[in-house]
Image (cartoon, rainbow, N blue to C red; front, side, top):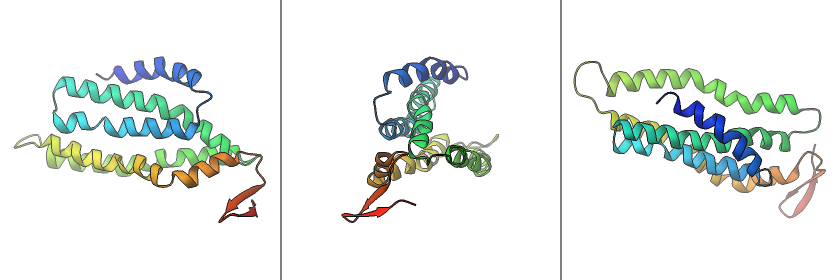
Length: 169
C-alpha cells in the first residue's frame, strides 16, 4: 500500500500537468482538493485492505491534480520580483501543519485505536475526514475572491472593488 502513492504521483503528475496546461490552476486545485478530501470516506465506511487501497489511490489522484497546480497558481498571483516570497508563503501551511497533525494523529490513535481494548477506527477516520473537508469547502466559499486574484495575474495594475477601480499596491 505504501508504494501506491509514489507510483501514482510519478505517473500522473507529468501527464496531468501536460494535459491541463490550459485549465485554470485554481480549478485544478479545487478538483484535486475535493478528491483528496473525499478519499477519507472509504475508511469511514470500512477499514478493510481494499478500502485502504482505494483511500490511497483517491488521495494520490487528488494530490496529482492539485499539487503541481498550486505552484502555477502561486506564480500567477505573485508580484514581479516577489516570486520567492510567494512560494515560501504557499509552502508555509504544509510546514506549519506538521506539528499539530502529528499531535492530533497520536491522540486519535491512542484514543480510537489503542493497543489493547475496543477500537473505533472508523470514527477516527470520520474525525480526520471532518478536518480535511474545510479546505475544499473554504475554497468554494472564497472562490470569487481567489479567482479575482488569479485573473489579476502578475502584470495587473487595477483591482475591481465594488464596481470601482482601485490601484493595486
